[in-house]
Image 1: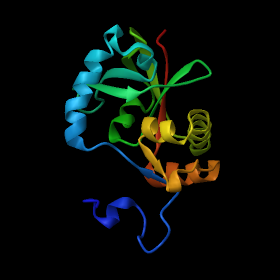
Image 2: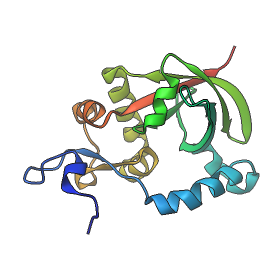
Image 3: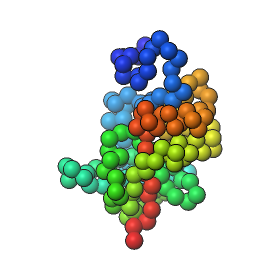
Image 4: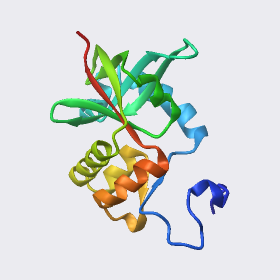
Length: 173
């Protein structure tokens, strides 16, 4: 049983649910797991799993606060991406510096928020196809209707409805 009110699902419960919905672990779990994950990412203990996650540290645009987040890492054509629906993503609008810990190495990078629906939908489609359903759902923080890979059009609809975005990280110059 879900404790989330139906209006928070983003769809009318009398209709078929959308192909893509947000799916995150409970906040109590992330409050415990995130600091542990960020610590473990600094060590070789996670082995190859370190390639699936990164820690992104940056300064908030409006608050000036230092923020560090453990995120799923998505590597496409040798470019590192973060996928997000959360509001912190807007800190990278117009580009912003960040310290990115990935694969055991910290690098100064420039994060740039991608807001083009077609580009984002293509990125999500491409990644989900390469990951397979289970890994895609877990690493993207999404749930797919009937645990089936959504189409590119489904992703385009979800980008608009859920405000999904991508942040491209490139080495700072």
